Length: 187
Image 1: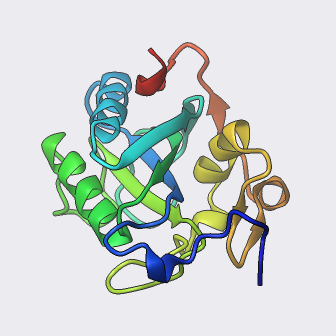
Image 2: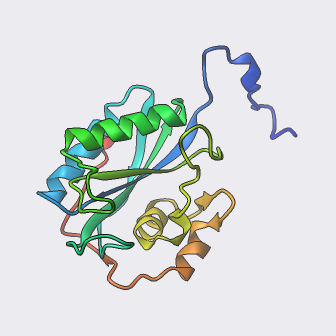
Image 3: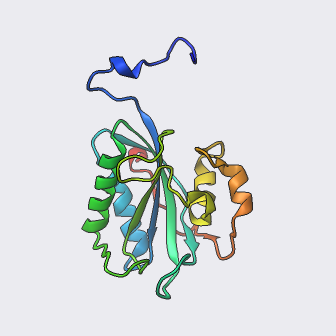
């Protein structure tokens, strides 16, 4: 199937890879969360072969899921473009989390930094990573900030963000315009 004269035959790229849209979800509810999120986005932007395209507004959201009672999170979504493979992106996300003191000792426990890869292009699960993120379509803390910066965005297999956000519980989701995380590429 052809999409026009600019189709790329990925089999002829050799060591080069096509550019994919990557969606990251960032969250923090321990320490100086605004400073942690700011610096974590800057560190992500320093990743070779990755360009931060946009950073959503910050939202304060209640903890969702099973786990110990904990403070609200500050969440945001980062849109990027990259030629990196999903596992390389996941390794980078884990390294950034670790550099900010992320501990994985308590399942669903409070976090200095949590970075989820929501999607990488239209790729689906491979190796040790589930793509798109299996619960992203159910999470207001992902969908609401994502919609702010990508109103025509879609989750492969789940649908348009603008439709999905209508079906999630947005109780306690508060936009924090007093906290601004700038796109490091636009300074």
